Image 1 (cartoon, rainbow over the protein chains, first blue to last red):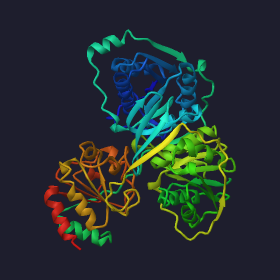
Image 2 (image 1 turned 60 degrees about the vertical axis):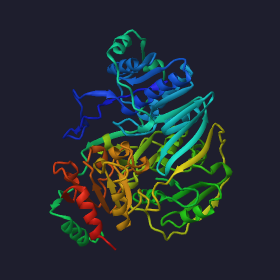
Image 3 (image 1 turned 90 degrees about the horizontal axis):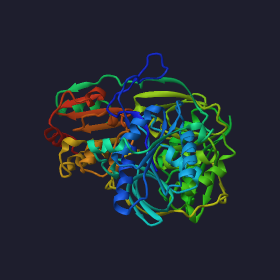
Image 4 (image 1 turned 180 degrees about the vertical axis):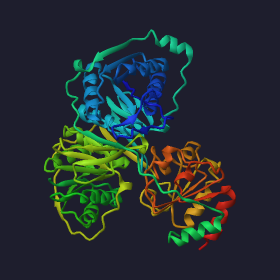
Length: 245
Length: 315
């Protein structure tokens, strides 16, 4: 099972609405969260390398998420599931929904991005693993599967941590895991015929109430404008003046 | 308001400075006391270090053979078992805390706040979204336990000078066997200061052009006793290992002095350095976005400017 979140395209520079009520997102380009695209690519490679019965792409959100699921199908997923909701779910609610889906679908591996580039929460995979009481391999940059056991190399602050874990499990992807393939036109045509089921979230879970209230959205504090120095002599003098070297 | 529990980060020998930064965050609002949970294997020295942080009341020390490596699946149930006496459970927003804290929160049946930057009352918090392009204010009053990761770049580490009591606790949770630690391959720092906590950092970008040329960055860093960092472009080009990456997808840092060399200043990089005290940029493209955030900019070819700078900073 691969989780694909629909997010604002990473090339878009988002702007805060002047009244602090949120972000100006009308009409901006949307895309699959880049880390989730890496997750799908990894699932495809696992199928090519080790075999996998089926790859299911899952998204939770508005009906528009079907666009991203179609892209996922064009990349190579076998079928797609949209859990439809117009609410903006918090990570725990997403994890609870995914847990209910895991119970239905019984996947051997759930793989998703380490974070979505909108909320930057970096929580959903860990929470799903927690609710499921299964292993988690976060920030994965290398993944091998040998029968019922997987080995992941994780990009941690101190370097590369290697862990071994039993399947089923949750893996979250880091940037260096792979480079996602480009979708070819014939694959886009083929994807139109692949099954994409839409299920109302109420049929899956009723446990999605928010716990947090966002009361304001503001632009970040700006740094004061600096100066351009003429040469390294002036630079060294400036740093000396500030007692930095 | 109740008590705050902080999950200590350490490498098996020494406490990570991120722990004292979490204490600073907890100290920034009124509460009934701050305790630190130290999970370790033969980690008496780590518990002592934690007890010496100013403002800490108690260190809860679970020393066990299970806790030799910080595996979230093994640590989370132990932290969750301790957490029931607390109104807040904090960890650092390092890879350690990001891995662990959501797992703890889900066990407690509550949500989690990531990367908290500030709070006035311990109920309402500020945190960045969209790579720091927006700051949201979030009210967590509805949570019976507030679980959060603390953005380490936003807080100065609490000083030493405390004398907390150390309580030894037994593991009161079932430890799973489904996840096993193998090894840590790491520390490409070559004995230099730690990137995340260094007072000075010198970073190189794609303009360095090769792994060999990156030696210029190491040389300059060594002259001023700085840690070495890199842009994502430099990491993707294979000049350095990923643990040196600074930015949204790497490390978020707040050194007193940050020197960016041959780095254009993509948003995702700027997100990682905007809390630096002084930013210096050396780039031959005068239009590079890095100059918009630099306190001191030098428009020059790095291959001329950096050797010159190294000579002028000669000790």
